[in-house]
Every structure is written in structure tokens, then in C-alpha cells.
Image (cartoon, rainbow, N blue to C red; front, side, top):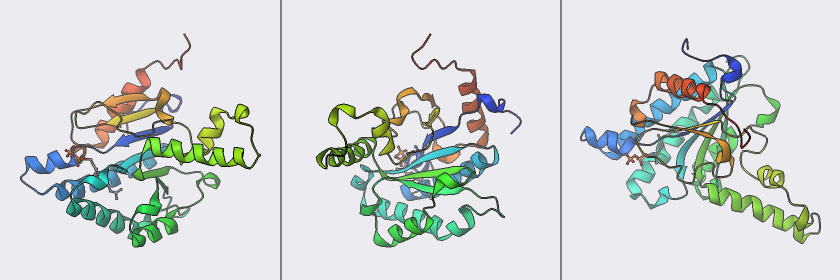
Length: 242
Ligand code: FPP
């Protein structure tokens, strides 16, 4: 925690693509699902740490709309991990005494297994009323799907005569996203050597600073996060100005 910039240079919202679990497992001759188990531990460490250092919002890419194409055993192993985590969620979610954080889910959770859906909806809290870190888990999430979801809501308003097409604004689109009311990600981190965003926070990342590293997600540490934040703080963000 000693290696962090002053508060005004800290990112408010950090997005993290938890990549490299499969390769981490392969390097050790383990099944891919073991990589996800190791990755889930790091998810906990990093979400706790973001809370500790006062990050307002941290969004983890846990399962994309494309991840259903993976072998059924791997999908099942991931769903099991989410379930295990959420079963403990009472300990984790916001509690003033315990000083915990708020869990939120981004994505089309209507398509995940019913049992998990129940856990997700019992965990979802109204984030706007509380003043602690929000930990977003992107689950069955796709950035384009999210924009489409927002646009459909707007189209329905137009059809009902509540909104004129010529009056649609960027704010209307942002208001229909799963991140409505949250700051846009200042910093997006992708470990494991891949240099792309893979449909993560597609609308919200327009001005995000991107930070890549070769470390595989299960090896990612709080020191790596500190380094990403320090690099971010040194960058000069102009938002299209001079
Ligand atoms: C991508 O790495 C990772 C995923 C598709 C899953 C990420 C999910 C977790 C780490 C579990 C999080 C747990 C909770 C409770 C939120 P990959 O498997 O594609 O890696 P590879 O590119 O090396 O094959």
C-alpha cells in the first residue's frame, strides 16, 4: 500500500480481465479448472485489496457471453466456483460493521443456471445508496450485448412515444448499461500477454487507460496492481483535448 499515488491520481474505477488461468494450469500439468480455482483465489485477494485501498469500483471479467463455447466440464467448474463464492457472499457483501464491499453483477444473468441466479439476485444490492467499494462481477457479459440491451430499451421508449429519436443522447445509452450511475473505468488491466479488450466494457472503455502484463492471472499480486496504478497515475489523460 506504500507504493500508491495520492488520492487525486488514483483511478476511481478499475476493470480487470482475469486471463491466463488455462495456461497457468497447463504449465503445471493440471486440468484447466485448477487454473480457475487458483484464479478465483486471486480474485478474492485483489477485490479485498481494492476495498482496502479505497477504489470506488472494480469490475472483473469472470465469464463472457462467448465462454459457453468452452468444454462443458470447464463451464461447470466455473459455475461451481461462482456458486461457492456466492454461498459465502453474506460474509462478503456490504455490512457496515464488517466494513465489507458491495457485490454487483453485470451481464445477462437470466441465462445462467437457476440456482446461481437465485444467489445472484439475493446478493444484488442497491449500490447507489452505499458508500463503499463496488465489486462488479461480469457474468455472461458481452460489451456489444450490453449496448444492444440499452438500445432496445431506448427503442421501446421511442415506440411508446416517450422519447423522440432525434433527442437520444449518449447519456441515454449509458443509463441503460449495467454500469449505470458508476464512473467509467479509468484503467483496464489485462494480464497474460494478450493485447485486446475482448468485448469487455466496450462502451465504457472509450477513454480508459490500458495496462497489459505478461503475468498469468493466478500469479497476479497486489504488487502488480500497485504497479498498474502507479503507471496509470504517471499518464497524462487528455480526453481528446490538448
Ligand atoms: C480466462 O482465462 C478466464 C476465464 C474465462 C474465467 C475467469 C474466472 C475466474 C478467474 C473465476 C473468478 C471467480 C469468481 C468467484 C468471480 P483462460 O482460461 O482463457 O486462460 P488461457 O487463455 O490461459 O486459456
